[in-house]
Length: 578
Image 1 (tube, rainbow, N blue to C red):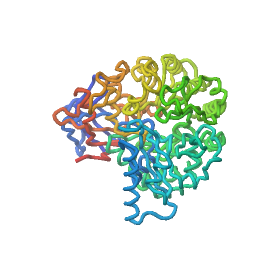
Image 2: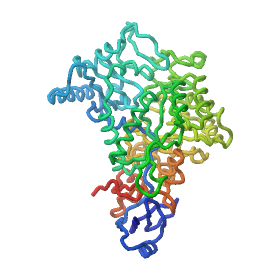
Image 3: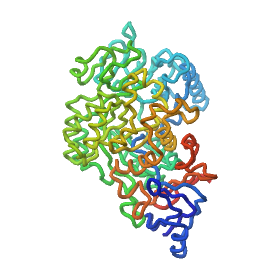
Image 4: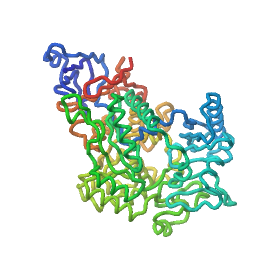
C-alpha cells in the first residue's frame, strides 16, 4: 500500500521543511516537493491533501499513566477547584448524582483527584477528614492531591483502614496527626497504600475501559507512543493480559513502553529478571503488515523507582528545609534516617527509598540489561539518584539510558553531573503551570533560578525527553511545548517575559524533545521520532488554516491554540477531527 501526503509543511529537522512525502507499507520512503512525490507514485496510490497543515512526527509522551487518565472518569473532579468549599460542593454533587442513578452500594468508595491547594484563591490548605465528612459520612471518601502523592480521607475511610490514634509511623511516608494524636485525614507518600488497601480492586473490564479511553484521547492529541507506568509489580501479569486483549481485539493502537514499578522490592525485580522481562522485550506485536519492527506496539520499558515525593506536597527530598510552612517540620519514619538526622532542622521532605536498596536495585537491574528511571524532584533526591547511577555509568557512558523522571529542583553542579554521565532527563514542562506560583516561596529565588532548567539541559547536552505525567497534568503536547517555549501562562501572559526566561527553549528544541528525544529515551530512535526515509509513518497533522497552526512560525503565545486534526500510525489514519 502506497500513500502520498502533499500540500503540507512537513518538518524534517531544524529549519528544514518539505511539501510532500511517500509512505510504503507503513514506512516513509521519500520526502520532497509535491511534484517529486506525486509524479513518482504508482497507480492506486492513496493521496492525502494536507491543505497546508504542518506535519510532524507523532508526539511521544515519555512518562504518563494511561490507566490513571482513564480512571478519572466518574471521580470527584478536583482540578481547577478554587477553594476547599468548592471541592466539597463538587463531591456532594457527585454523591447525589450516583445515588440517583443507583450506582452506590454499601461500602462503595467515593474517590476524587486533582486538588491543588496551592492554587486556591482563599485559604491554601490541605483538606481534612472534617472537610471530607461533609461530602459523605455514609461512604468512605478519598481524594488525591493533583500530584497523586498526598491523599485526603474522610473519617470512614480512615476507620476502614484501621488508622486511629495508635497508627504507626510509616517508612517513607506520613500519617499526619493533630495535637491530640488523632489522624487529620492527610496521608503522604508510602502511607497512602494503607488507606487504599481496603478498596475493592477494579475488574479487568474496568481497567481495559480506562486504557481504551486514554488511548483514544491520546490519538486525538497526536500522541502515538507513550512510556506508561500502569503497574507496581504485583499486578504486572494482569495489566499485560489487559493490554494484549485490547490490541488483539483491534482496539486503539498506541505504542506503549511499559514503565514497570516494583514498589521498591528486590523480590519483584528478581521475578522480572527470572522471566527475561528486561527493557526492550517485545510483549505484543501485530501479526498483520509487512514490517515486523513497525508492528511492535507493546514492549518492556524501564524499571521505575521513586526516590522522593513532590514539591506541592512538600515531600520532595531537599538538601535544605522548605522556606514556607515551617509547621510541617515533623519528620516521617524515613528509610534512610542517617541522611535526615544530620541535616538542618525543619521540613526537608524525605527519601521514599532506602539508599542502600536504591544501589542494589540499580546495580542488579543494570547488570541484567534493564534501564532504570527514578522519580526524583528535590535536589537531595536528584543527588541521591545520581550517586546511585554513578556506580553503573561513567563519563559519557550510559548505554542503558538510565534517567531521572521529573528532575525539577537542581543546581548547576547537579546538571553538570548529569551531563558528564549522559543521564537522561524525562521532564514535564507543563508542571510549571502550577509550580511557578510556589517555587520561590518553597526553595528560594537562587535555587528556583536553576530549576526546571530545560535551557541549561539543552546547552549542556543532557539527553532530554518531554512528557506530562498525565493525569497529574493535561497531556496535550501543544500545551507542553507552549510552556517550554514561553515559561508563562499562555492565556494571561504571566509572568511578563517568562519565569526565569534564560531557561526557555525554542520551538524546534521542544518539538524534538517531544518526538526524537522521547524516541531515544525508549530505544526507538531508529524507527520513531523523525520524518525521513526508513522511519515509521507515525505522524501528527497540525491545523494550518491561515497559518494559525504553523507552530514553527506563529507567535509563541499562539502555540497552545493550535490543534491536531489528523493522527497516523504506520501510515494509517487512526484519528481525524473532521
